[in-house]
Length: 70
Figure 1 (cartoon, rainbow, N blue to C red):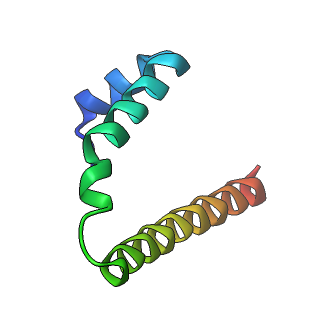
Figure 2 (tube, rainbow, N blue to C red):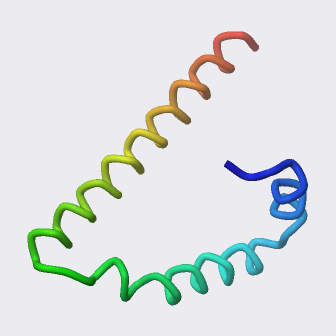
């Protein structure tokens, strides 16, 4: 979770600045994602996909909730 300061800084960034930050993080961490046996790498990516799906579902639920209240 980001601190309020980090969150405000992130919100003030342009789209290109956020994209650069994303690419930098990928570049720095790619070797760790691909380290290990094929089974370990597969499990790691399955976990990432599951977490992304959970975040997306949470966001969709919140959007549905706010749509009902407006």
